[in-house]
Length: 426
Ligand SMILES: Cc1cc2nc3c(=O)[nH]c(=O)nc-3n(C[C@H](O)[C@H](O)[C@H](O)COP(=O)(O)OP(=O)(O)OC[C@H]3O[C@@H](n4cnc5c(N)ncnc54)[C@H](O)[C@@H]3O)c2cc1C
Figure 1 (tube, rainbow, N blue to C red):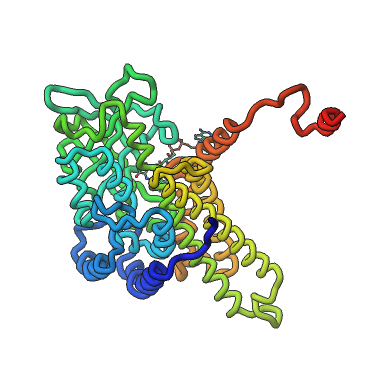
Figure 2 (cartoon, rainbow, N blue to C red; figure 1 turned 120 degrees about the horizontal axis):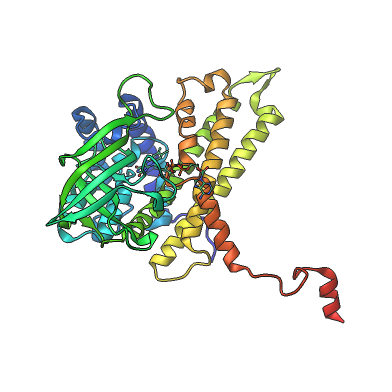
């Protein structure tokens, strides 16, 4: 059965969400600006402003929708989550208001999957309630895309783990109550079994934020960088601070990054849709050479390309979401969701780049100013192709998955060789 529609009851929820996000959440991006603002749980003014909104979301059963009912979420599944995340992608504050902000979503998932009961009570519950935020501390200054190059290590001393090393781009560490740190604990194992995850409360002695690194789009003045360069100076945590088993770090990281990547892709559909809406409005408003921009074929071409690319990307995201749901239901989809997630990761960066660029261009000089959100969104273009792993790594994963399905030609010539096929007819 093929279906491209949403059931009426859920569509009503989506309609409510879209109106709510547009009217009540998007204004928060201007009232409390800055990429780190939604994570700053110590800011009483912003927390007071979002509390009633979060209550509304909870009352409608739309809080923490990435989690199943056993974890306190409604458990709508990934297809519905994709439709919701499209709406949440419109505003920086929206994921926080709906209890689905990254990286906390991914951290909550691995705590739920691998955490002990004590770890869940201490970290997962307040995370899901939106009372604290968390940080995933994996990338190192000398290595990112290939975790096999990581050197931050941890060793056991009595009833404690001691962590020593440096981590780079640990987003939101400055606001986080705890860090999930990937460290080499079993150097004697094969590469994928050398690392483990350790949960470290951020105020543990020896956790030193060297600086909060800024990225494109952050204000150059002030101290608003959110990507921490951290040194772990012989940081001591109890033996039960390990998340998962010794040597399981890769497994835990993969479980987390898969969900994170597809959720980013879902939100990117929404951000691109908003940019496309802006293009349409602009084309219908602005005149040149005696006609509306909308009446010029170059402009029509930009709008058509953007819509076509967005529609294709959206279908890929929806299929990926459906495939994850199939696996959850105990069935085997035709393409492994991990491969589809890698496709989404690659395509997300490209579609976002192309659509935001066209939207800026169509708005002329106004497009490059900070008087529209486009310049800020453009700042995210390069990050989208890097965060959660660079494009090349995911392309290689996609290609390998397909190559594995194929085989070498049976003889000297390709199996589509026409003379050979005609010869076989004789
Ligand atoms: C906005 C943002 C937020 C982030 N948040 C976090 C976070 O919260 N926690 C965290 O731990 N990390 C985080 N990261 C880091 C992110 O995971 C890394 O940037 C990413 O894994 C790439 O690592 P790297 O930056 O060291 O680049 P490198 O690994 O040095 O790669 C640089 C380039 O080398 C090429 N390359 C790398 N590998 C291959 C390959 N196999 N084949 C071909 N070419 C290749 C690609 O062109 C790639 O872009 C974040 C990054 C960004 C941009």
